Length: 198
Image (cartoon, rainbow, N blue to C red; front, side, top):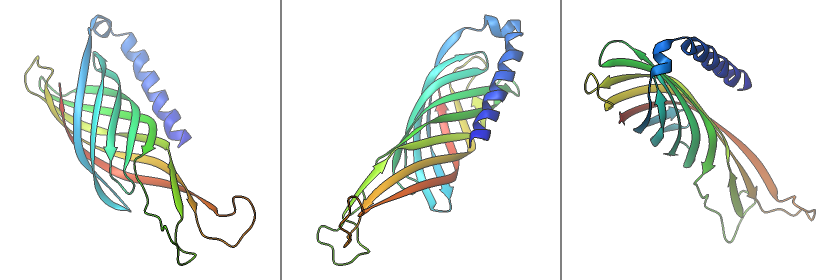
């Protein structure tokens, strides 16, 4: 994971240096931009819905912003992340874009527990904890006019979201905290989104 993050940062820095030498980029105005997404995440744990909103500022082909969403893959959670996007023009209305997101994945899931356990395979208590969130991919953008900010977009990417859980289970052990079991969940999935940019 560290190698992926470092590689992404190097690519962004190299591209930034290249555009810093472009006079057109220096003259580009800074504009507010928002994109609303809905889509599907799919992986080894099945498929689930996803919604996101990403808001920030753009300058030339670059965008820097912050996003939040609701992700129902495996365990419902709320990703909170920073986002960097680079647009690549194919014509007046057709564009490609690359994006990378990184942040924290906040749990929004409550596991059912047994109030009156009858066996050692039941759970007496459960607490989820936040973990890392990373996503990156490629998309296609169709602008609704030559000079319009409004556009329809689709994207496909790869996402990693982490969560951890502490479970309290029945035990005959008399030592402190021997009834606690810690789990780490690493969720990898492909994410397909349809969005509207304005």
